[in-house]
Amino acid sequence: MLPAYLSNPFAAVFGGGKPIDGGRTYKDGRRILGDGKTYRGLFSGIFCGFIAGCIEIWLSSRGFEIMGINMPVFGPDYKSALIVVLALASGALFGDMFKSFFKRRMGLKRGASLPLVDQLDFVVGAWVFTYLVAPEWFVSNFTHGIMLTVIIITPLLHLTTNIIGYLIGVKKEPW
Amino acid sequence: MLPAYLSNPFAAVFGGGKPIDGGRTYKDGRRILGDGKTYRGLFSGIFCGFIAGCIEIWLSSRGFEIMGINMPVFGPDYKSALIVVLALASGALFGDMFKSFFKRRMGLKRGASLPLVDQLDFVVGAWVFTYLVAPEWFVSNFTHGIMLTVIIITPLLHLTTNIIGYLIGVKKEPW
Image (cartoon, rainbow over the protein chains, first blue to last red):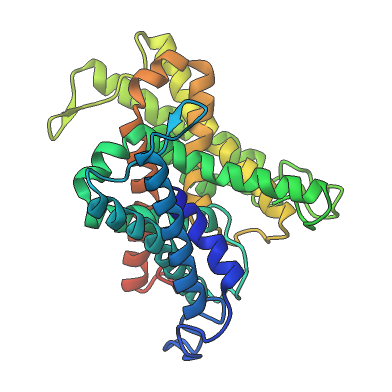
């Protein structure tokens, strides 16, 4: 999941520039996606997530492990593994973009928060993309138990980060 | 899950009257829960959900089935089954109330929608209560696959209902 977890923050860091919707509005008169979704963010996010996945594949090939846990392999061979990594990284950002589209339709401004939706958009996007390119690998690796764990842990992880940010004073609200 | 699914709409239908927070505000100056959470709604919702569960238990005891699917039994004996039904019905409403507390803290008004959170609050509440009163029954009945299905199907069911409502003109927005 690391390529999916990393593509979003990297897209935010390297983002900016021309918005993907080119400033155009939807038939409801609101922006299609808004200024928060840019080409630079999209491509740099996918690139960084992809690189993270490549590092994982490389470490895995050298038998590297952290606290007894092996690096994930993402597939039976290098080609399949790279496709899965690309699907995880790009799916995460497209999931986020898909959500932005609906946020604009609901009349929410850029950055308006939707708890749970904001923390799971990229997970669902990454899973859908990965399932489409590698259904067998997906089904055998993302068991129901693992999926349930990711769905529960991801928002909690996000909340924990924000509470820490609140306690050390860098965030105004604890969520 | 029927007691959990029914307690909420019945609470809305029979609700009104004295709010549970008695009009009091939290330290942020906003209402603790708001006028949307009343004693009458809470008790009538739990009562109706409980009755629905009792009907299921009764139908199950007579071997009743719908399209080849047996009614759920909720436990090894009547006493355990009634406790589970009560936990499902009341957990659903407490989950909803818990969410209302956080909605007020976020400054959201009564009825302001939080997609996904609004559709899963009662599911999580019902599961937590049921797990607390009958952990063994819970674990053997709510497998990871079933939990994942409920988490995915519940918001989709809600969305479908709303889209139908939009198409036949009783709802202004399709969500």
